[in-house]
Image (cartoon, rainbow, N blue to C red; front, side, top):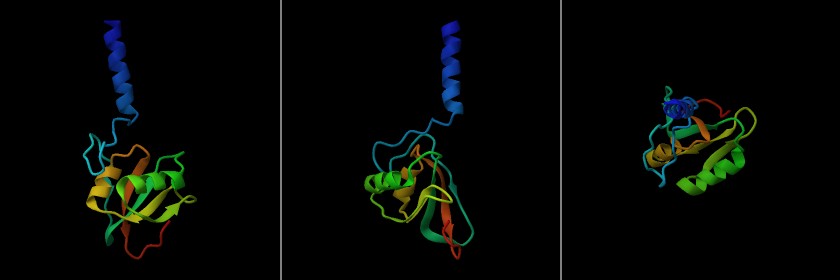
Length: 115
């Protein structure tokens, strides 16, 4: 009985920490818990700002994701936030939604300077 309770607590703890998301094995594959996209008024079509979780090196992680998903970041952010801005396909976005290094994906609003 105690072992069952401990097992349940371990699973609940993992779920509460937000680590349920698993990166797909192939770019564009679906995952179990994708990050929602933040939609904005007057968004530039297919243009996104991607923010990394705290502690992620934006330069090396952007390079890894560019190689994995086949896009080119237009800007890499290291000061105001850690992340990048890029033109992305729907398949790119679906894959990035499953990456554990990513905290947020936001449509890029027209007329706004990058962070």
